[in-house]
Length: 133
Image (cartoon, rainbow, N blue to C red):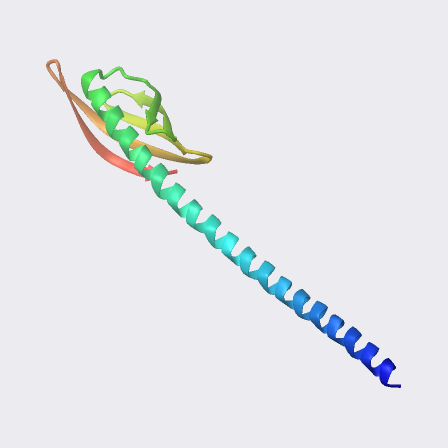
């Protein structure tokens, strides 16, 4: 009888260890899933802010180009290593500037309206409206 009790005690200990390991595994997976979700949210927030700053830089560049040449119609502008903008300009005295800003895989669309006042050979450009589409 003593030998049977010893064998059952060992099997109970083994089952207890397996149950504890399973519980720990569930906790670790739940925690890592939460951490991964938080990391994606932070990456999305950073990409959103960065694409906004890239689009602002492109808008300023386009305004300078329009000031130098009122017939500027747009193009692609590289910003840093990972950023770029595709710009389209339409209109005459009030121009609409459409900007598609990309940062890595993240893309945002913006639109601006500027007034162009020509005084002789000089063009004065003033920002009227700027918004995310």
